[in-house]
Image (cartoon, rainbow, N blue to C red; front, top):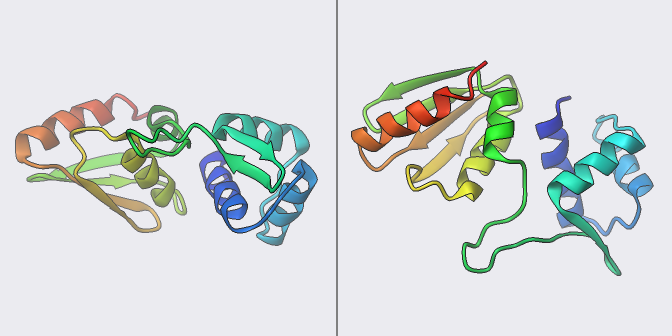
Amino acid sequence: MNKSYRQSQILKLIRSHSLHTQDEVARALRTLKIPATQVTLSRDIHELGLVKTPSGYSETGVDAAAGSEPGPDVAALAREVLRDIRQAQNLLVLRTPPANANALAAALDHANWPEVTGTIAGDDTVLVVAPDVKTADALRARLLKFLK
């Protein structure tokens, strides 16, 4: 399991369960067959901007004006999982390893990049819709910088 997948599962877990300790988060991840050490969980919790509240871990840093939630940074995530970019008119098809497309699509959605009208994710493919061909060209150039 990679970092982006693990972090997306952590977010799902804290949104649907009241988890008060890192041990509870680790146990919940193990039920999903996702191993994580205490050091890894501590780093993930910090990177995701989670805080402890009386009702358990919670997301912070929600920007009410932008409506964005904390999560993996597009640049960091793209460097880790983006494998290929193909353009068809105003559409971009992004390829990732299996189980990574959703995290990348969510990061793009939450980044509020003006070039991105919306995304649709499968298992290893993200369809990114740009408003027009020129904007899709610019977005492709922006994303190409993250390819390994």
